[in-house]
Image 1 (cartoon, rainbow, N blue to C red):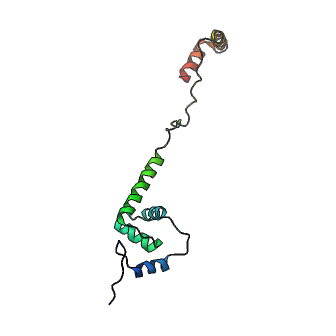
Image 2 (image 1 turned 30 degrees about the vertical axis):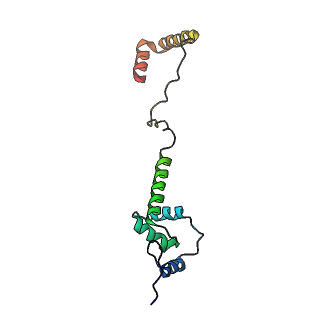
Length: 137
């Protein structure tokens, strides 16, 4: 009786042929992509992953290579999620925009502002302007 030839991880030639026959007619997938798909399907242990790759893609891989590809992919995903600087925090709804910064070197603007306040006092009275200021803030 002839002994079945086996590969490194113990898969026989018959199992390999069967996996190739069951594999759907889809374009050839790289080993890294196959590992990504296996992890996406919920396979985490290297022994399960190697069996998954053989069954679904007909790809031979040892446990060490599967584990290495999986950890490299996790590192890439973690790095991609932390790229860049954080953006501004969104302003709460209903809050007014922050006031524009004014320069102190523009003395003429201050005089104009004081004249505008004086016109408001003339129009609404002292108490009215005071209530207006209290309402704003």
